[in-house]
Amino acid sequence: MLNREVVLIPLHLRGNHWALVVVYKSSNQIAYYDSLLQWDLADHRKSIVEFLQKLHNIFVEERILHAPVTANIVNDAPQQTNLNECGLYVCKTAVALIRGEPLNFGGQDLNYYRKTIVKSVLGIDCKDAPANSANTLEPTSPSLEETIETELNLTF
Image (cartoon, rainbow, N blue to C red; front, side, top):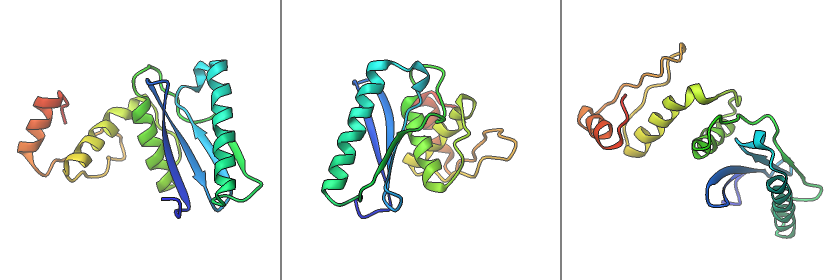
């Protein structure tokens, strides 16, 4: 894992929230992406800064990164509008960063990404999202699609 140029570290915070740390080895950067930054809880932000400092020290001591290392909180990460989609934001942010895509998604896009993740995990081929964002996917296995709809209450 640590021989990769980009290392993704999902964080489970306080037992009820997910955020993402991304380590960019070639540029000696550590970035923190959090879809709930708008809540701006002072104690939360302080603990994140402390965590980033500890992570910085570990990566430098282990010679994974070389000083000087820049660690920052990404203030323009996509923000969720509820309290229950942070894990999906972490997944979508990670995929977008790996693919070099802009982080310009929001709540209106998440139903499509949720379905894509479920289908990917279950091994169903997914076609790319249409340009008009109609959010339709064509399943390759109708019986599996019916199972998903029934068991997970997701319609495709």
